[in-house]
Image (cartoon, rainbow, N blue to C red; front, side, top):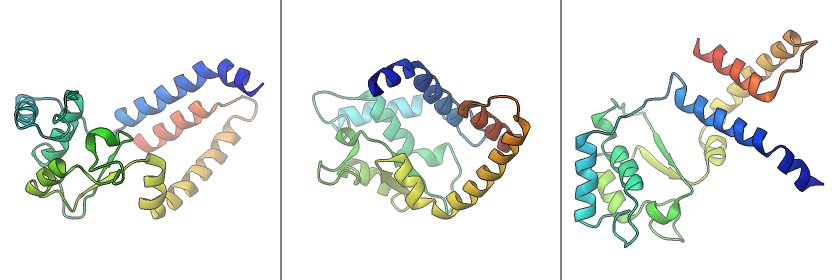
Length: 178
């Protein structure tokens, strides 16, 4: 019964997930960094010197591009002393020091972050929701109050209409981005 329910709603869940990811990347606070010759050159150099994640026989050039973007982030975005960058991924194989130290960068990456002056700014995390809960607790409480207020507003506005979760998320996004 549960499997049938999940299968029946699979497309809805997939669509909802895609919409949430798109909202995240299309948010006015998101900064998009275009791949340039400088980044590609750094990825190539990483491969030549066999630095993580290009140090094994199954190189991941996409992961190397992600790491090089992180390491050279100051070239693209001005950072302040109080800024923090959270590197969140479940891909421990390509970025971590070891299986036992999943949220510790591989020494190659750690060294490059240190050379870039980012060692105190960048924090490695494995789970988005845990990061939000643990690292953004105060912001989360304030956000929850605003969300509850907006949900009440939406319920009043939609007394005779059904408003889906995705519609509420769209309304919340519109409220905060305009």
